Amino acid sequence: MPKIKEFFREVRVEFRKVSWPTRKVLQKFTILVLLVVILLSVFTGTLDTIFSKFISIFFK
Image (cartoon, rainbow, N blue to C red; front, side):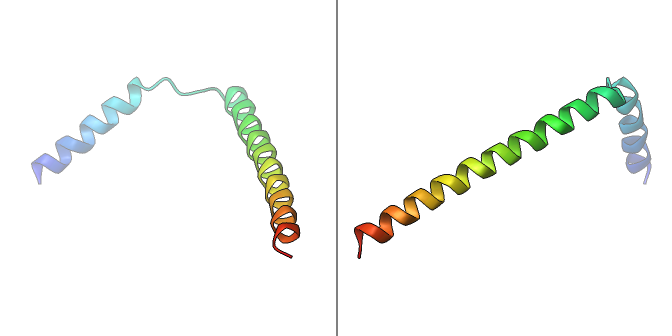
């Protein structure tokens, strides 16, 4: 049991050392991640549609 308490004490100490981002920075990175996900989804969907049509034409 003492090892568990020591572990959580050390975790708390380490969390105090972390340089947490500000709310503004966090919002900017969240928007950036969402935009990249949307762009990659559109890109992947477009490629999928193109390849599907090519394959259906090729194998008819």
